[in-house]
Image (cartoon, rainbow, N blue to C red; front, side):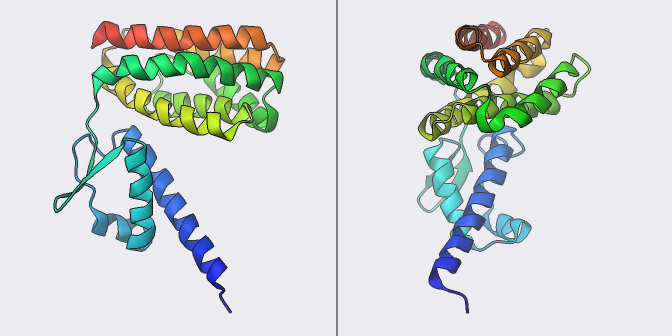
Amino acid sequence: MTTTAQLVSSSESLAERAYLVLRDRLIMMDIAPGDPINEGQLVEELGIGRTPLREALKRLEVDHLVQSYPRRGTFATRVDITELAAITEVRKALEPLAAQKAANLRGGTARTQMQATAQTVGSLGSHTARRELMENDLEVHRLIYRAAGNHHLEETLIRLDNLATRIWCMALDRLPTVEEHISEHASLLQVILDGDAPAAKELALEHIVHFEESVRAVL
């Protein structure tokens, strides 16, 4: 017999799955800024009911990735370049902290995956497809946040990095090179795995500052 608790748990897991799928589609611009969210299509495609889908959309609205309008529906938010300074201000304070904590734990629960990702980063270059670069960037940052061992810090930084990645997506085709960005990831992952907390803190700050400067130079 299915209990009420099991039904709630099932609904929550479906909402979580819908949230994660839609979140990354919005970040990668598979759903373009300003596009409507077609609930009927998503219900059919994801094989879920409208209730978990709407729970997912509520979370995405908190993340500033979608916006709902009465009697009009829900739409992907537009990318606001003017938000870059505000996003960077907070990331400059929190990213070094996350990297430092991750290094103190030498990657913690994410160490094995971080080692594998570090090897993948080493194989990337100018030949790498744009989408693969973006997916790898998201993976590197999310691993570091998880390795820090503080779920409040992790959740906050994921939300900020998602917004920053959408802005980066707008600029990526105009950036003259991505090799330096890739190199920064490789160095940062290595010092975390080595347990060098001061270096991790410094490299994380440099990475965020360089990111903003690179994007501003082409937008």
